[in-house]
Image (tube, rainbow, N blue to C red):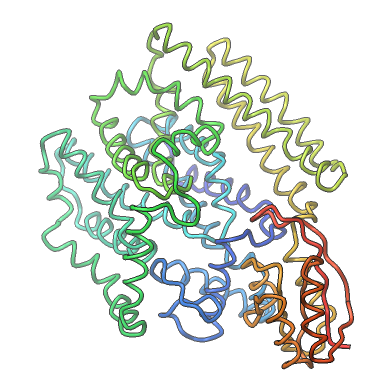
Length: 550
């Protein structure tokens, strides 16, 4: 079968619909996502599209590219639906949704170019349902958009690579696409994008001892296109921040992550390999099973290209001190294509007893993760909310038989059929999670519930919420840019100075300090409601009261 534009469009539509599930009901996910949302919203309200800020603090972590996309999406929504939509989560998630919609067909195209249409479709399916990709595609963070950018310049590299194999010229538009995609990547994530951007061709050069195909990308002038994308903003932010942006973004954020684990994310090498079983589930076991076939076929040009994409990126991020699962997400399309090739093209090599034992242990871990994934939603709802959801129950009834079939087929060595069953289980489990579980988890929806209470009782249109005990970014996004995150004594002082339009949010354990501080000024307060729940960012149980001057 030859894939046509209609096939790729249908793949994109399926991805769009799967990534759409639960997007409207999913609250802002602390801590990174609401920071992106709030900074993008502040771009619109301030009109400052150069200097990225969260409240009054500069957010000098990466360039402004992702904030421009999210602000543009929010502005379009505002045009049609009014300014109230700026405090909704979904407009800021549209760039990730559209990026995911394009990533899966592009992966299918690359797999088709390398190994044929069946492999391309299988690779697209494995990536589309992988846990990390699904999670990131639902959030208004940078990672899904960055993955699309990486795929774009890897696609240009692939085109130049295959043109060399066919001994035909590479169009200049391909070279332009490569350098422009690198420039866009610099605007999204800074120098990090150069790791896969230059790592792939350098690894190929090292393996093949041949760099002639690199000239097909016109490097003698192409780098000027890359710089043309990013330099204007770099000059502007350097002037506006008086050089502080580059000091923070490169000196502290980028180089700091290399040398030291930031924000309690310092972990030893091997972390990404360890979490791969869950992050790429359900494809993780099939990727492990593919290793013998990949090794056997390692000299094939297609395999060399994909390994040159994966290995440099993976090694770099295993070696740097700071580690988060999404750091190796740009390698997942290449892993999906190699995994799909092992399921559709290559024969299964004979394994030693040790190899069979190792894969058997990994398969046991994979099955445990899969079963846990199937039942997690039902258990979570019961433990946290003491309820059962009919929709989640239906999802459970759909996932467990498919998971059982996948395990049975694996034991019978029917890997391709097992992969289909596991992917089906993943789709149903994810739909149940986003449509039935998350909307009913009121215990952890602290920020939305506090914001709703604040909106109901606030005395002025421009009322300010002062929070002493709950300081997550999601609260700032939902309650407004002017939200004050202070200690109990400072909150009492703020309330005393601004009694008319201020409400204070205080946890039960801080109420004594807060009221004693108010008592010194002779002010008393009235409680307008309470919100109890779990702050999942730090595991603290909170009993929050909303107070206003009596």
